[in-house]
Length: 195
Length: 195
DNA sequence: ACTTGATCTGAACGCTTGTTCAGTTACAAC
DNA sequence: GTTGTAACTGAACAAGCGTTCAGATCAAGT
Image (tube, rainbow over all chains, first blue to last red; front, side):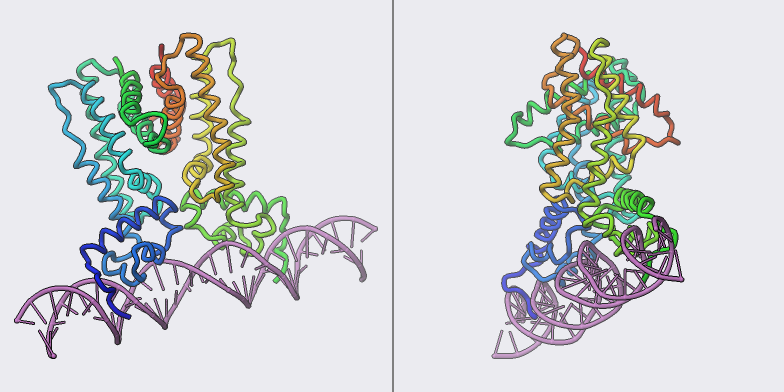
């Protein structure tokens, strides 16, 4: 019936996000209850509502923060270096960024159905911005005669699907290092688009 | 409090599976209740338990039937025709089979987390059998000097991720026909493995 | 020591869940 | 028409859900 000793909102808010992320990634949004998230944080369920308006907002915020981080972190391509270099950079960035955030990536791809329609639209538009960056690289490469793809948009979707697929199997403790994986996927992607 | 007029178990069982499949694909296993499935079928919730032992079995059966159909439908490669032909055939088969069953595919990929551990193991082993078929094609192609891939298993995962990604955007009413999509992906896959 | 605001607790609310099963009606065979 | 089985209904059970909010305790400032 009282405040928990030692509690600070500056601590609690990130711990709620971290707990929600871990449980949503592991079990799925609909399968996880607010009570489970609260238990993971070490508070009662009512306390969560000081930090999120509702469960849907908790999911939406996790997805938006991840996608905004992704877009912010994606470097502007070095136009002087050429399209093949830009593509290589994109592949390395994608694999490395995603491998470092398996939970966020998983939620961002798997929980789209659990978003309300307006939240879904907002998230879809962020995802589209990221896809457009690769499309721009492919367009530039074709304009320079360095790349040859039958359909730029389809190639974009194919490459992103292939790269994102790394997260379904890659483990730090696995047979291949992240650098090796980046090199293999870099090579495959180059071949896929070569002129 | 009585039997529904005109009811036949031979009708009801497939209608339960179809309703479960549609709702699980659209909303996710955990977000769909047995009462919703029953309502879609036109029965009361108690009736479902004449056909499934529980909700988890309903999901598991849908996934297993799909994967067994996939494995049964996959043709044995024509060894005389050569590895490139076998690869082309695999790509066309994968895209065509998956495009025809968007709900089953979606459930098979998205609902793994909702399987109990023993069910998960059973499903994973079926998926592995399918992946092995592509690995065998890649191995044969390398043995013949027709293919060159840095890591056969990684190439298998990359190709399947790319091909399965088609289902996230392809629509019969879209800009490209299924045949065009098959051709584009066939070309990309060939390039990806070419010697 | 007192006051004010922060941060939670605890329980309530209205609703829903998966599963079970006694009983009822429909169907089929004779 | 009777009998036996099929196939459901309807309600109960035990448990849980998301969200709200009055009130209690902790923390910080004076």
